Structures are given as C-alpha cells and as structure tokens.
Image (cartoon, rainbow over all chains, first blue to last red):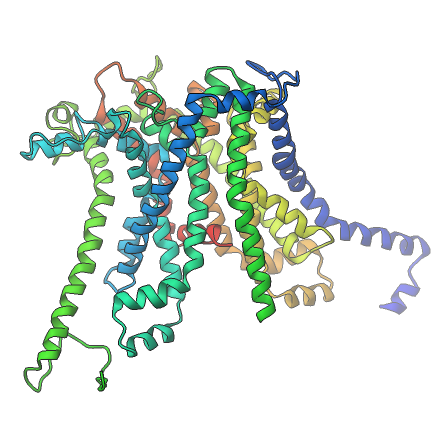
Length: 312
Length: 310
C-alpha cells in the first residue's frame, strides 16, 4: 500500500486527503437534515410557541409583548380549572386502574395457561385501534337509549341506570373506563415481559421455603419488577397529559364543559375562539407538565445506570 | 414441610395410585380451584374486551330498523352488506355523498410515504449514531429523543405558519411532512438501540477491508435489519394511520384523513343515527391497523415494549 502511494502522481496524492475528508463527512451530511428537522421541531417550535404565549395574539399571531398576561387569564379561567382538575382525576384512576387490570391479566397469563397467544391477542388488540374508533364505539355503548343501559333493561332489570356520559358529574368516569379498557393491555404486556425476566431460581427458593403463591408474588416477584411499575406510570401520565382524541370522539368535552382536558382546551382556544396567545400559554403548560414528570424520571434512570455501572 | 415430594410439579391428571391421600386430595382441590379462578378471570376480561368489537361487527351487518328496535347490543336477526357499501361509497356527510373511500385513500396517501421516509431516515440515523459516532453525536441523539415527548399542541401554531408558507395547508403532503418530522425521533430511537447491539468489531473488520459508509450499511447492517425495520414500519404505520390532531387541524372536508372524517361522520346529531352505516365506517377506519396487528402481532408488541423501556 505504501509503495503504491509512492508512485501516485502528485495531483492524485493531493486529491486523496480531500476525498478522505469527504468520506468522513458522509455520516454527518446524511445526518444533517434530520438534525436540522429535529432542532427546528424541538427548539424553534417550542420557543416560537413560548413567544406567542407572551404576545397579544388573538386570531393571528402578532408579536406585541404582553408578558405573562395570557398565563394569568388562563389560570383565572374556570374552564382551565376544570381541565386540570379532570387531568388529575383522570391520571390517578387511569394509572391505578390500568395497572391493576394489567397486572391481574399478566399474572393470570403467567400461570402457564393454555392458548397464551390467543389471550394476549385479545387483550392487546385495542392498542392497534385508534382512540377515535374506541371513543366512537364506546360513546354508543354509553348512550342510554341504545347502549348498555337499554341492553340490561331489555334483560328484565327495568330500572337499571347506566348513563355516565349524560351527566356532568359522571362523564369523566366514562372517559376513565374507556381508557382503562383501551390500554390495560399495554400494562399487561410490560408486566408480562417483567414477570418472565424474574430469575426462576428466586421463585423456586421462595416456594421451597413454603411461601404461598400470593406471598411469592407480593414478596419476591413484584419487588423485582418495581421499575416496570414506575415506567408504566410515567408513560401513562404522559399519555394522560396529551389526551385529546379519545375525549374528542367520546364526549367532545361535554356535557357542557365537564370533560374538558388541557389538550381539548388548547384546540378550542386556538381554533374555535381565536385566542391564539392564551392557547399557546395552555400548550406551554402541557409541555411543563410533561417535563415535570419526565425530567426527574430520566435523571433517576441515568443515576441508576451509573450506579449499576459502578457496582458492575 | 419436612418432606418434599420427589415429583415437585404435581400432576392432577394422575392421581396417587397408592390409594387415598388426604393431603394430596386437598392439593388437587386447591389446584383445581386456582386453575378455575385463572381461567374465569381471563374469560371475564376477554368478554369485556371482545364485546365492543363484536357489537360493531354485528351492527354493520344488521338492518337499521332492527337496531332501532332492539338496541345496539343484540344478537343479529338480519344479515346484509348494504351498510358497508354505503359507508364505503355513498353515505352523505355534510353535503357530499361519497362515503369514506376518499378519506380512506387520503389516509393511505399520508401514511405510506410518511412511514417509508421516516423509517429510511431512522435507519440511517440509527446506523450513524451507533456505528459512526463523532464528537457530540450522543448529544444529537438525546436532542432527537426529546421529540418523542413533545406534546403535539406545542407545534400547532408553528406548523400552521410553515405549512401556510409552503403552500401545504389542507393537503396530504403537509401531513406527510409533519409525520416524517415527528416520526424521526421514534424511528431513530428504535434503530439506534437495535444497531448498538451489532458488534463494533464487525464494522471495524469491514473498514479494514476497505468498505466504506454505504457499503457497510448495504452489506452488513441492512441484512441484519429486517426485525427492527418491521417493528418500526408497524409502529409508524399504526401511529400515523390512527393520528387525529394534525388531521383535524390542518385538513378539512375531502382532504381529511379517515380519523377526522369518522368524527365528522358520527357527530351529526340532528337526524336519527344510522348505526349500521356508522359501524361499517368505524370498521373501515379500524381495519388496516387491525390487520397489521393480527398478522404482525409479535412485532407490534415488541415495538410497544421497546418504545416504552429504552
């Protein structure tokens, strides 16, 4: 190779480093459009929306600076108040409910049942379907005249009442039941993966010590998959903050404004009422909520990985 | 528990041949009831999960008059495909009588290019960020990851402005652009985490043999990629097909993807609700991702769990 180098003409020798340099540039050149797109999407868009939230924009973005006025009027608004109260209620029930159902199903499937693949397929299929489809179908089921209430009454229980979506105080629970139906399969899949990764010797040791199945799960198996609980919770809080489609299809925020969520309110402010500035402020609050959940979580993940690295 | 039975996995199908053993009988009984409980729980939940699907399928095949008489949840007493034909091609939504077919094709025209482009970009990015690292490449990866967590609402106003400037408002191309940019973060994450597990020595050996950037990608990375590419394509396809927010904000009427059209279709509260046609329309909207799930379920679940626990 070196002898070959010696006989290359001078011009080619000069060209070679240039071509080599181009060669090392290829990865960065290929990556560049994605870097640019991600940078614009993550930083420019966020700063842009932040700026609109600090401006007096109404129907169109304008750039008269008004400081935190939009945030002040947002937090003084009764509908925003309903939106974030709903979000807290929804997140709590959603996380606890889908984890409980998901864990129950995962443990049941983990008992060496026949037809495991079939059971899993049944519990996971709602995840493939859009929230729009799920919300639409469940809005029919909740309909007191045509749905579940009518069905049960038809069976003979004539004063049975099940009209969650018709009542301002209960409509939020209709959304909660539906989201648990849609997504406990997701919790199940993660829990099942976790249960399968538990060291079988550990379980065997507990059984030899005479621990019952229940005790084995509570004391040995579940503690070892504790990080999965946290992961599921974090992912679901994020989903909850971004909830839009399901409510849009299921209750459209109603009756009245009773099932307003932050994302619904952002849409409403920006595209129905022409209050872009305040809508942007609400969107920024959504981003802040996601950050409040994710930043500590990712710090914890990094810390845990480092700790694991140190301990070998 | 001084004695441990030599056959630890007790088999209830083969009772103790030496005669009646009260302890073993109790164990058999316990075993039976615990098995019963497991299957009872699974069956109960399976019913809850399947009933909504069955209700929609049945109602898409029942006559509207029968639905009106007997309610939504009922055993079908009529059977016909008219509702499907109407939902596909002739049902009227706000003045136009073309059913869902146009919206169905809009969704396809949006989902297929966006899936392909974002997957190709993700594979390239993942390859570079795992095998051609440079100073700052980790930082760039983390920057791209942030895109996974951004609420779509943050980008609504900027997109509205950009799509306006590019002349892409109310067009499928605009939605393709949005989904590609948004999708890069997911596809890069999937592919990068997969390619990291390919041994670096393989790449080093190829480089010593004189293989360059593209050659290594074609000859080494690509042949190993099918599992992750299938996961990524399925994830992107179902995610983009099912997306609603951008569809409803940036398109209207005949340009809408099927999710937005479904909401418009079922919103009409003035006339008597045509549950038969609406059921068929809902199924048309749900069918592509459902089929993908049924045929690629393994990969779908893998995407789900990998996307969740990085």
